[in-house]
Structures are given as C-alpha cells and as structure tokens.
Length: 185
Image (cartoon, rainbow, N blue to C red; front, side, top):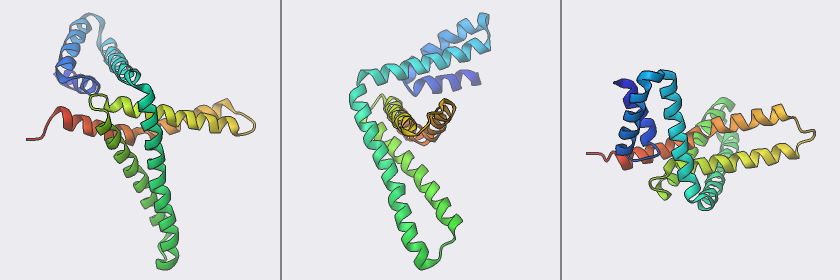
C-alpha cells in the first residue's frame, strides 16, 4: 500500500526502519476504524514526538551546533556576495545573474550545513536541524523585538518565513539519514 510506504518513510526519518514499519502497521490497524485523516494525523504526531525526543536527548549540544551552523550558512552567501560585488564591476555581470547565483549559493550552503549537522548527530539527524531552526527562530524573535514598534503579525510572518527558509537544512540532514539507514550497494 502506497500510503504505508510514505508513512514508514516519514517515521523512519526519526527512528529505525524496523520501528517505523511496526509503528505504521499499528496505526494502519486502527485506521480501519478511525479513517485516513486520523491515520495521517497520528503519523505526523508520532514523527514529531520522536523528533522532539531526539532533540531533548542532547539539546544544549545541538543548539550549540545549530548556532554554529547558522553562522556557517550565513557566512558562505555573505562571502559570495562580496565576491560578486567585486567581480561584477570588473566583468560587468548583470544583476539578475548575481542575485540568482546568490540565492542558489545560499540554498546550497544551507543544504551542506544540514548534511554537516546530520553527520555530527547519527540517529538524530533531523533533531539537530530542529535545534538550528529553534536557534534561528530565537534570533528572528529577538531582532523582531528590537524593531520599534512591535507588530505581532509582522513577527509571526517573519518567523514563518524563516521556518520555510529552513527547509534546505532539513533536506541535507534527511539526505544523510537516508544514506545512513539505506546503505548504497
């Protein structure tokens, strides 16, 4: 069944493949009575619960590495931006090219930081990126408080946009997780 494979994949990102199969099997049995909506909510709750458990196991160390990861992820595009400013005047590169490469460099840097974090926390790869997302949200929250006047809607929008921007970190960590769980032949 396709939905079982997708659910097993989601749960296996934060647990062992065997545990994922067992958990999804139990949820599928109950889903026959309760329906598909209940099944997917339960899969999401289970995945988030296991993710949170992985984070709380070593949260101080993970937050430290998450903050370091943020510095790295911001330093790479910043360095690239300085390089593009210097070379665009010499080689007359159009602005849209610089912006496109800057955005791509930022996404690639985030993906690589996600992979870097994933390698430092085997078995809790995505939990490490959760720590990074928490550190990122804390920074955005503090910066929002510094602005005058404080607009709650703007702060929530900023936090939401920054969380969407964290997707490449999680993708990099998921890449490491899949390589670790399913070794290449």
